[in-house]
Image 1: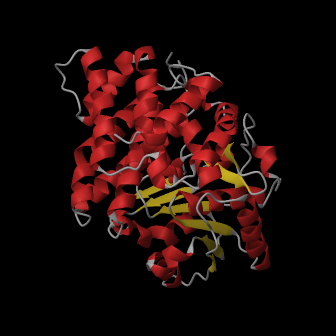
Image 2: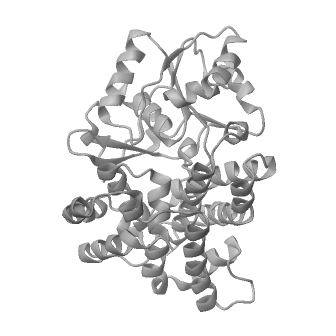
Image 3: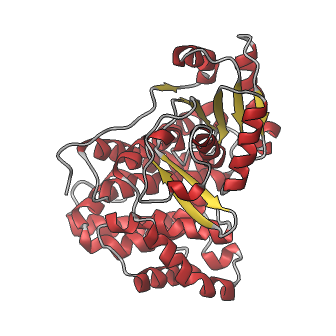
Length: 393
């Protein structure tokens, strides 16, 4: 049921559009007296020149900065602690996350843990942490996670490989710079995975039991943009209009799910990343069609709206038809965009089978399945994982 009141949580500043990274010094000035930011990123962002672009914007205004480029996919608590050491050694007073979801999530964690607990389990759901941390600016270079506007930070406990979604207003960036120029060099695989991640955010926000009028509008526009532009960006990475639209869709999707929550797809996706290192957007894409099919009858009108928004169904289709077309369209996306099954990704079958119980328990522990239209049992989650083992389309 839609909530009657909702507390909307967003960054203080959003700078959106081509070349908006040049506005970074103005953003820092608006936030306060910041003299020494630390850029948190990875080596790929350095090699691609994205970090140099951010540095140039700062240096041109006489702002010196440090760089921590040791972040990794599925960031761990150990990496966060290493970044914290760099922050303290350089006496930095702000963090700037540059990259995809992993560097931005690392930066968000550093901003909070620099002032509060450094034990990842203190942030484990259902805990929420709302006290302000160090100023943090997010500069996304992919169009997918929406991490630049969310109050979630996903970290992996290095010892157990459990993925923990840290939550609360403390993890909302102070500002986000959404500049689609950074996405023009993305390869096809990353383009598809990021867009399907965005699409998952839109769908799950729209069918979540915590949805609101606010999140609904963001979710529907997110889905419309992906449906209109994904094929274009996949076919031509230099299509600036498509890149800009998908970048904005990612931000809209982040605003939607951050204020409505994710559901079963994300709950099942994170253990795949934590245990088997499946990239987050790709694991969402692997699971989205069958989880949608599993949930369909529990929220048919809502899923029908999704089918129409994406363009799989027409406005003249009744709800049952539109909902079925949504499922068919999602399977077709995976086929046309060459999303591999779990098996084709290269995971060992025995290891996968042995991990099913733990993955299902981790998914349930996250709390997200309770917001799904159809709340699954542990056995039903295991069955969905097995369906995804060899099913990509």
